[in-house]
Picture 1 (cartoon, rainbow, N blue to C red):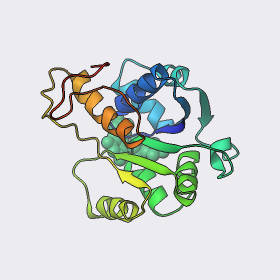
Picture 2: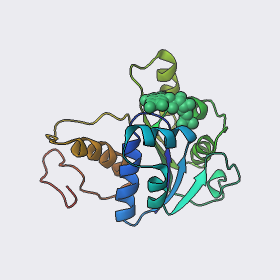
Picture 3: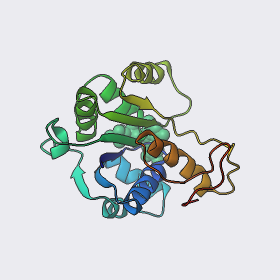
Length: 191
Ligand SMILES: Cc1cc2nc3c(=O)[nH]c(=O)nc-3n(C[C@H](O)[C@H](O)[C@H](O)COP(=O)(O)O)c2cc1C
């Protein structure tokens, strides 16, 4: 499996980093695009760096590089997760702007019928944010998966909360992970 992972400048960049850590462990090929503000937010919110995120990915592209392979529908990929997704990137994709590589790769996945999991993060949400999400949710291959961890699995640590969101994203691609206890099941292999 080959996935594009985009990390933008919304709060919750740790979700994107965790997704890369797990996908690396599971030997899934990842193509990472880190926006300028995604990288700055990693530095602001975590003890990690953009270089750490890059070290986890199979391939890395600049968000300004419109000639990157993932910019074309002819490049084979199974889907894309934008985690977390800023309201700026959400608006760009919802309006077909293709103005950054992240927006362009999202647009390419949409037109090619490949799954795109968008993990928006903002609070509160304005009517404009909701309209952009609603527009994208109406497209069959897009999943809007807000960074909203559940509590039914009795999280004890911040890692449990992060793993719940990341596990739900991986579920969308049919990736077996065991990151959280499912309702009615015992703990899986990576919990
Ligand atoms: C620490 C920090 C946290 C931010 N959190 C959010 C957020 O949760 N949601 C959001 O839409 N924008 C957030 N922003 C603003 C975005 O980074 C900004 O709109 C940026 O232009 C997004 O660009 P990008 O989509 O290319 O990454 C945050 C900025 C900083 C510095």
